[in-house]
Image 1 (cartoon, one colour):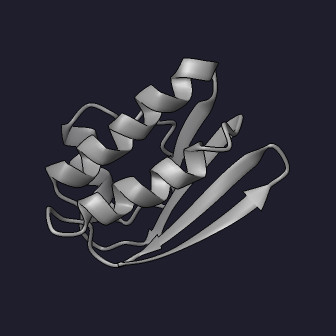
Image 2 (tube, helix red, strand yellow; image 1 turned 180 degrees about the vertical axis):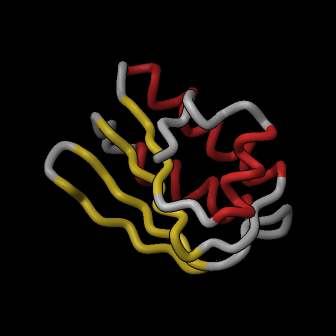
Image 3 (spheres, helix red, strand yellow; image 1 turned 120 degrees about the vertical axis):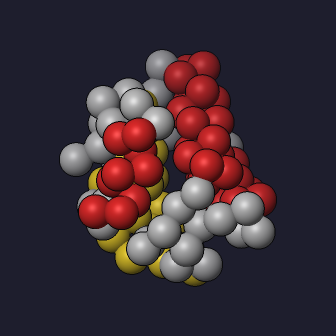
Length: 100
């Protein structure tokens, strides 16, 4: 998994590349945690280059959502490939995560 963190005004965009599974979810958790340390108003997680996620990836992103809500921030997940979108749909998180 590769990540790129970009500051965007009052927000942060995290672009992720590669599969996100049980083995790399801790790395993703660290990246998102560091991005949230600045308490952005909006955290955008861009999954355009992610062909696969498992439940650990979903849990990691939900954990970031819980944390950003502590200061009334927002989290949005964007650019999902069909298989990844299906995983979030099955989990019932499409609307909660602002998936576009």
